[in-house]
Length: 339
Ligand code: 13P
Image (cartoon, rainbow, N blue to C red; front, side, top):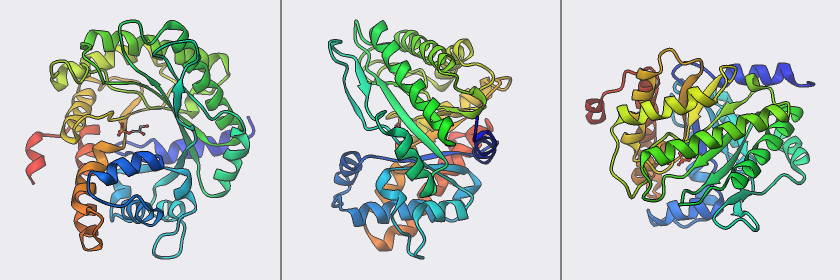
């Protein structure tokens, strides 16, 4: 493979004990939703101010090794005149880019979803790389219902993830492979276990068929949890179910598993990660984060779009990053939330 040395360097820079990834790659409609909740106009200027606030948080690079950006952010400038990806890297945070174009219904397969964006992907990756991106992310989404996702839907989604990952490696960007089984719905933890296991099996079979080098990718899965409409599960139970599925499906060659938060409350996502690391001491992969909402939510609530609140928001982001760092070491305690 032409870029294997480059890919190895990126993996080394991103996969480190006690460090995780910040997902700041919300599409414009998604960030507009987050801004609406705090009464901030979804303008390009405000999006730039918010992403700039995130990357310029002092000390963030101690706990965060990579940041996933949205296309628009790659070209935006920070206060010092440098682009946001450049500022991230000067702070020891590897910049990356979300490259999928969002989900649509899978034709003739009611309830199944599929993600778009493969056409022209290699050309787009070359241009993102020139702008500083060293890794990419692609998300496939699986809703749970009685007959959904179907076997056919699971296979079609796995094929998309594998084709995307192969193109990334061929172009010299580390692929983050994100199959997200949603928490929405009234299903119990056993049903979430069953679907997540089927999804991961299909994903790794497809990655193998497409010659993706497992050592040079990162997996971004959901934790295994009961649906939002079902009872709450304690961290120990979430950790047991999640590790059981991952041990059955994810080859040891994969260097790191970086969980999405998927709508969990920030404290819940940290406590669950902590239990996963406590129970997963002998796991062959790093067990880390690639959180969006669970890292940004408290900081957004401090910020409210006000320049005078930037420092308070950065403090809130730094706190969540540090607590998740402790959870990666299995050393988090709920009492630390009050410090
Ligand atoms: P959440 O952690 O908010 O689920 O976001 C992660 C992400 O990147 C979704 O694609």
